[in-house]
Image 1 (cartoon, rainbow, N blue to C red):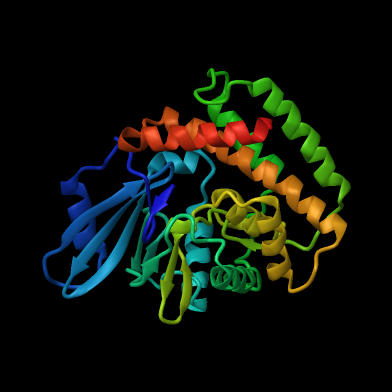
Image 2: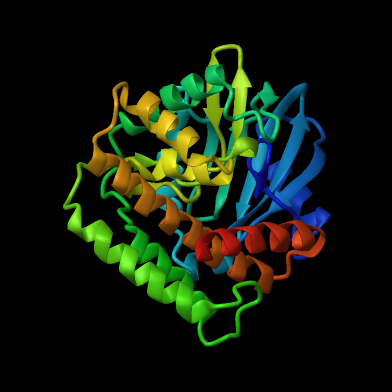
Length: 304
């Protein structure tokens, strides 16, 4: 639920234009005036496009409450600098994790149309990007998170509040527990740095290749988490998922690998549903209808 160059769908909460302008003048390189365009906000941050002295930047300002909800600004900024240096993320030009300020170059390119992700050329491009991300050595100490930890994290944020979207929360919790047990049966796999929030609006096609935006959920995990997430956010069918995994691996997956992919896909959807429950409680504003509709679609898929 993000827009190009790093902004999630807008919510009602905003720091205000005067404060955003003050921060832009202070942190964005240059000496001239700034032109601001609010891109959006999510659970953890607010993002602006800033034009100054003929150059364009993305200014991301972390929500102070995000630190209490489990976001690690120092890890995130280190990952963004790593990704920018490797050419798989926007180049970082200023980073102040203590203040929650991050300025990156605005990435010029084309955002993929919704529904185009299954095209063969795009399958090849996205799997190449995933392999490049997963080959990066994560900053240390690494932020390792399992599906069980993501679930527990969002369940703590939801607490005892009644569900907004999920019609059968008890059934979903039971199904999640069953799949976590199945995942454990597969045994440990070599972890990798994962982006963890890949969807069409977080990918920009540039002249030199694909660039991934919005790294705030990046963590170290089962490397399948990223192709699984791409398949879920783009509503791939089972044959399309199998083809994606085949292209990612560069070979035909084994039966166990395919089964693990399927279990992780269900868990990824469930984590997204819990995220939506939290997001909608935060006051999604103009995005409320779209976020609710998407969450309802995911809930229906999980129960089928």
